Length: 204
Image (cartoon, rainbow, N blue to C red; front, top):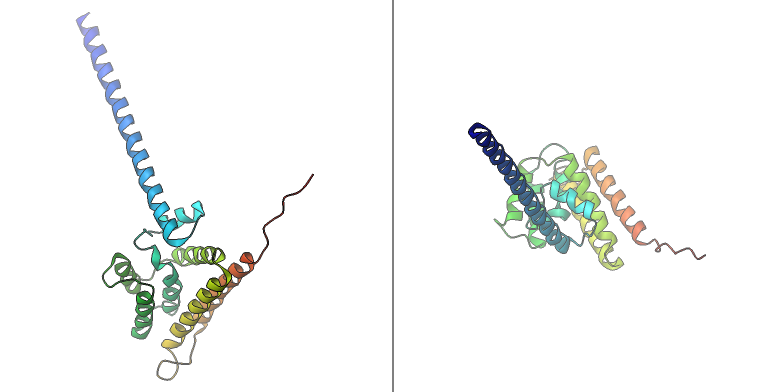
């Protein structure tokens, strides 16, 4: 009888420990989910992106509420890296654009930018960021959207011209032309989508 009671106590103890672990893991998962949702809300406030899937993509790429302001600089980085390295002049133009967007020296966003200038970001980051920019611009008033698109394309062209030709001007490589074409395509898509009328409900 004593042995049976001992085995029963051990079994109950193991079961209790198992359920305690399960409860702890569940609480940790819920807390982590809550933190991630709070982070996405802050990112949505700073970017104007309402699409939950896109916010998850940006979060998965490593963006945070402190670095998501770099979104509009990523196409400039893609252009600078088009030929495999970033020249001093290209770096200066990108840092200048960062300061114009309110990114302070040594801030978390500035530190991330420096890391991307030193090591090329992934193609996935470039492409998903560009789609996010398109979604943001779609939601902007037409005048603001056009101004942002013009500014982006102007800065891209300046970077493309920075490392070629005489004294660094005038030559755009095929790789840079490809980046410019892809960004222009996304900007055109954003303009077209923004101009489409909202679908009408069918009447019975």
